[in-house]
Image (cartoon, rainbow, N blue to C red; front, side):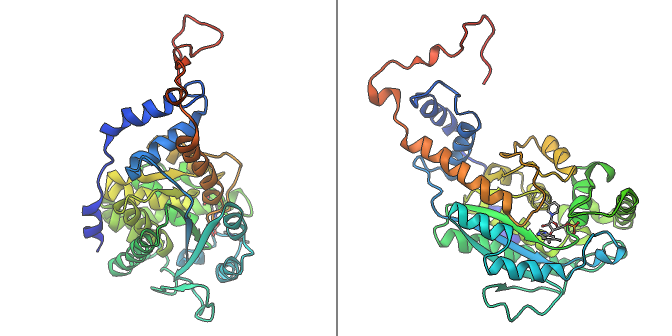
Length: 364
Ligand SMILES: O=C(O)c1ccc[n+]([C@@H]2O[C@H](COP(=O)([O-])O)[C@@H](O)[C@H]2O)c1
Ligand SMILES: Cc1cc2nc[nH]c2cc1C
């Protein structure tokens, strides 16, 4: 299923880019004056191939799972918070539930590996693969089979969204301990030093706790050195079930030409794996916000991506993805609803781009 999906992912047709840019430049406004909104609309039109784009139908897919590596004492809270927050999510009470309602997005919450019996949570999609991962500091977090099954759940949810007519997908996750596998993935696949991509996650007691987290990840990367040659094996060795599902969501969505908003730090690690499996995935991804988790800046710089919001957020769950969805939707309304110079039969004033007049070329 994974290889089949990857085979379907096509790069966008960049020969359409000049026509899209011409339309943006014909909209009745000074050229480039809507800044990033213009780039967002262009990316969306190219991703979907639809000259009349819409993001009215939105869905955030949250994957939840636990992590054996919490045994190393790398988190402020215990794994019991994972089912607790997931319970809040499905009852409309967590950060992502409130923000997704605010922006008019559907919310889907999927268990792929919570270390608790959550079968009584009726609004939770039950796709449990294991009761969390194994401790990646001592052994591979997942078997290849578990990792492939988690990716397949993500692909399944992307296909379900596309079949339901969803026009914009957002990622979300919940999993105490999941910044550790995310940092390990970034360090292995960017690549970068562990220190540069490791931070406090949801919270750490003190600087020594951060040093301990760095040391555990460095040790894990040495232990799994062989696996790090390959993105799938890296994901299995040092990743997480929800991270693998998010990788699958990115792959599945790209195969269906369905744009995806990547939430913060953890989702970015999942997107990186997808990108390393198929570089064309990048054409379908948007990045909601600059996570306050320090390693996110390294990720954004190395991949040359442009997060939309900068609000000091580091909650995860899909909170940033929810907020950025409305901005992307606004950019599409600009693209489809704003009149053009041509329609008014007035001269396009865009040759007078700079004010005050300057001998310097304009940069947009
Ligand atoms: O996505 C982010 O930018 C982000 C940054 C820090 C923490 N989180 C959330 O906090 C949890 C992971 O933090 P930790 O310290 O338990 O590894 C997990 O449930 C994430 O949703 C999320
Ligand atoms: C309370 C809490 C809420 C969260 N939401 C996402 N990760 C989280 C971690 C904690 C600890």
